[in-house]
Length: 372
Image (cartoon, rainbow, N blue to C red):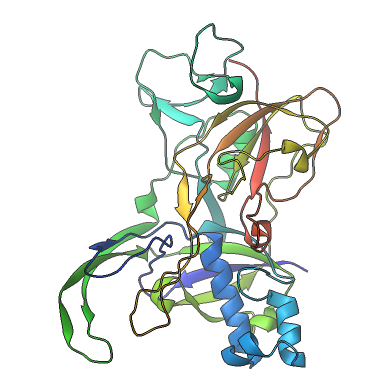
């Protein structure tokens, strides 16, 4: 039985993208917002491990132990397996009139011109040469003004309206949810409290505003595996404390079945594809044959793993940095015949890694579109 968690920090947070950072070499540590599924799955799995009573050393080195074996079945081990655990999100949430309302990055085909919002639509044909891949159509609106990305966030009701082709009344700026709080620091000599000269740096911390939280839906484990329906966990860089609470899950808008002849897929969380911005074969996500007509994709998001740069440790480790298609990206499809979405997360997984879809990558919603 799935359940949802809302996670509220008790202090500032920092969510690194995994790029190497070392004081003295780099001067600023940037923070992502919101956190990626990598961050949230790590927080939840660590909480389950802590609540199990199994020591981290035994978890890593004693797979034959019955308690460890059961834990591996629930949450996997390392980045190669996530066990039974399955997540959807994280999404941003804001408490309004006593209820949590989810917010999502505005779809990339929502733009503004002359102070008004518009939704881009593919052009039927354009007799002009371009460098667009796979003969994809241009996306277009009728305006004489300058077209700019809308940016911002939309709530659940606005997302439903958007999928029906309606314009959002307004978008919410990121600053309504959190503030950037830069903090300066200086590296210390290993094993001492003596500062290292020339190793000054600045870290970009985030402070969430009141009644703002992260929402994630959880399956494959029970609240008891976390230690109860509410409690504390460590979230993001430096293991900052956050309060979690179980609430009732709310499904995302379901995809039409069968899919309309022209449909678009909107990413709500990032996705990774073997061919960069697209997979080698779309049929893994759909029953039947589909044709990609157009796509609106913002700049890629580089995500990787933790970096260790300490001469007193066993060397440096850098999980490969990979380019992900960011949340908000939109793919326009056409088909002839009876086609349905299989319901699997809209992402692929690199070889030798655990299923990215299981930890929240590739969450999507599907709507209808027509030519401009």
